[in-house]
Image (cartoon, rainbow, N blue to C red; front, side):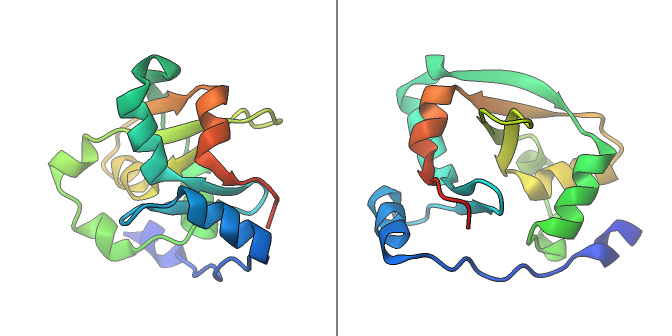
Length: 147
């Protein structure tokens, strides 16, 4: 599909030694860390562990799939078109992870970019999502300085 033609690669984050130390203290084997150009690094694996331990600090919703947001993902986020093409229906049912920011954009998708794009390509208007409370976001936000 034409949307897959717009993928670009994003260079790896350059971390200072204190930022690298901060990141390593939160990471366990298999964790996925999401980089936001404006907000720093978020540990999606830690999101899942905190969700299991403190479910009342998270809200489950059906999030709208906005075409502009999908376009942003395709152009700005490093995602793999092969993952989108081969995504199973079961994987597509898993919720995306969203953190709460004290910002002009109050929420940020940190896990589920491939699912969001695939759902959009299939014509879905909503996707299951889990939103972390501000307190949980603070823990998940492992490197707070903008990169």
